[in-house]
Length: 200
Length: 411
Figure (cartoon, rainbow over the protein chains, first blue to last red):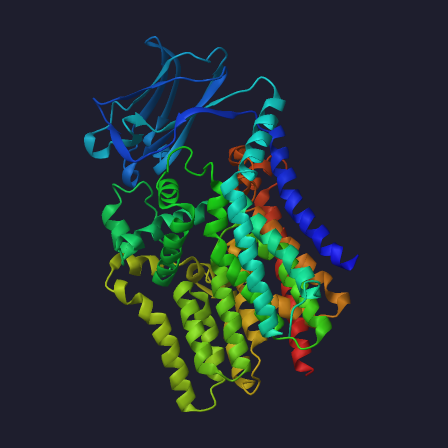
């Protein structure tokens, strides 16, 4: 019984964070959609140089786009505009100030959900008409595409829970992770046995 | 001694090992990414990371400075190279250099976290096993092992916050052991290495010097400390960026913040006052070779009397574990109060990565939550609440150290 006590404590320690983390999905209704996450280089937004990118959401309810921006030395304090266009027509517009952009920071542009966004083509445009080239704002790019991530607003709360649980199970059952876990467990357990026999 | 598979040691240690491996894999703090982002440049031949960042700010995807002494860079850089071999240099390098919108996520996050935190796990295990060597009585040794391996504070500070403070904690415990054993120069070398990783072991050095039996041992100990402390700094001593980083250390700023105002322009910092008193006391009791009370007060009072970073609790946890075995069971609730209020103070810090954000490998939605202090401010003033918990932490901590002194005085 005494021996089982520690295994029980271990079980509680391991299960509690998992259950807590999964339960967080009940409070948030946003799921990641398509994106271009890598950011290797920068292109620069200035007076006559807006930046455009086509995006193709996979789900209905597009409501957030995060973009990796860089305001070098926080020099830029000029207005920065985010536009979401469809067939050349502006459907969402957000304005902020360069002051709100960090020196290498993912900036979140949130707007009211677009109900029928799945399979449509949209265009993101970032403009800063008052910005000189010396204080230009960098946009992370990789392979010619800007670094962005879209999110959508799922119609049912349970969808978020399902997506997170599926992702978690997939990650835990990943062969490479399980192999690394097992090898490190055997290695550390061996060290413990050696250390205990040597020290005590 | 031969260890049997049903040994009580293994029944305690193996479940504790599994908890550690799970915690190492399941939690992420951005600091581990930024530290290893900088550390990767060691394998590209960059010895002076401070100047390198200063000169390349415009083209680096992450531009914050490296806020630790050079030995931390060499240590993390060496491990980063080994981790690259285990995980795959392409996978690790690609994640470390991606500061895009999903830079804190990766499909192999569990594996990356597990491998990057492996050194912390080894130092944590070593620290617990070494601490048990301080105790001769079997019952107390068992108590200490259970406390060290099952307390949530160490798990939080080492595996959830993903900080390397446990390496310094191990070095200070090893130094304490050697001081008790009258091997002062070896202890000084370890404290020097510790101070070269994080500044705080510097504060422990005077207590060791006071224990020198003669001038020769004093000089040898001082030289051993200076060698271990200065040697890793040699490649960066000329760097202005390095000098700037080091003179703006959080510890050095933190310990001077809270104090007793004696005039509109003058204040006596509480921590400095306690530390000075401790030096005087230690000098007068220099015949005692056990410096556990000095080490505990010096490290623990940083938490009690200054605005602290949550991971700094690891500095004092080994000494709190030793104190735990000395406390009568009727007084142990003080430690529970102390540690609970520590969690409350830490979680009320306005930073999403002291609590909910840490769960991002388990649930990517967790980063959408603001800091806990933001969430509760509609109902209660978070600073008032944090101050209240800090008062409880400080009060119970002072009481705890009072019991410790009493138990040493009665010996």
